[in-house]
Amino acid sequence: MIGGRVAAVAVAAAAAVTLAGAGAAQAQSFVQQVSEDPCEQAMTYAPEDDSPPAAHAQRACRLQMFERGLAAQRQQTMLAEQQAREAWIENWLKTTQPQRVQRPLSVEGFVGTGLATYGAVVSWNILRQLEVSGRYGKREMNCSDQFGQLNGDCTRTLMGGSGRWMLLPKDFSPFVGAGFSVTQAHLQVLRFDPLNGQSSFLKGDGRAHSVNLSAGIQLSVAALRLSLEYVFEYIYFIGTNLEDPQLTPNNKDLNAIWQDSVDADKHGVRFQVGIAF
Image 1 (cartoon, one colour):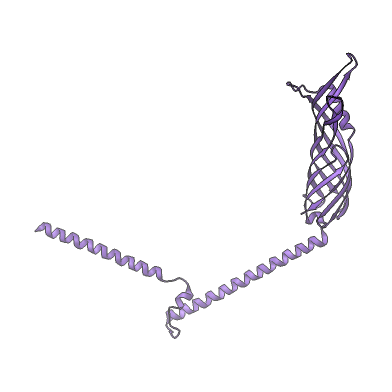
Image 2: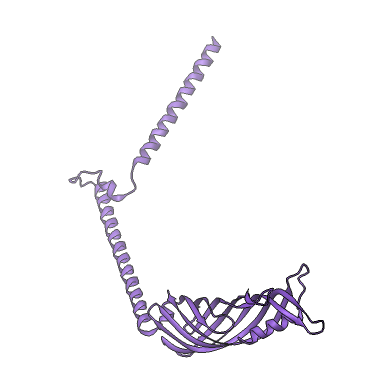
């Protein structure tokens, strides 16, 4: 009998806990359904309702609409100021700055004389009158083959960087420049040894490092970039190696031939043309 009473009490307690939880869930659901937006709250009252809660909700809604209008007006004002500032900067650039400032990046090609006779250049105007560039060029050259004929390929390859300082802040300006170059080439030559009366065929590779000075003129017209310059290369390193298993370095015959080759092209004139962005 006592056990039955205990069971009944336990069932009643569980039912009470369940009902309390359901009530709390319903209350929580009701609270969550109430919107925090003043205008949505005002819409829950009838238009003719003049009770204090309805009047409070309507005033809060009008205040919110007023604040939203002010925010939109401020945003439009800021946007107009930004557009005016950008237009002023664009007009200032067009009327006071040279094209190389408006279009600082360029891709150009060059032809001429010197260590390289043709190639490509990528330039960037990092300052109003300072331009830096990277250069890759070639000079097609023939050298002796094993039969003593000048049909071997000894084409030079040049890579380097340089800077130009424009003397005038205008689209047409003289400039001075300086840079460095690394030049490489395959070498092969038929050499006669007067001591033993025999000829030997030498093959190998040559390297030369140099610094250069230049002077010229540059013209910028819209996206077109043109320049003409004189370049002097000072060769401060010469190195060769034979094309043998040991890669024997600095063979005197190859060194002499390579030295004469690059010394003959220390002076050069380059014409450069390209598109600026």
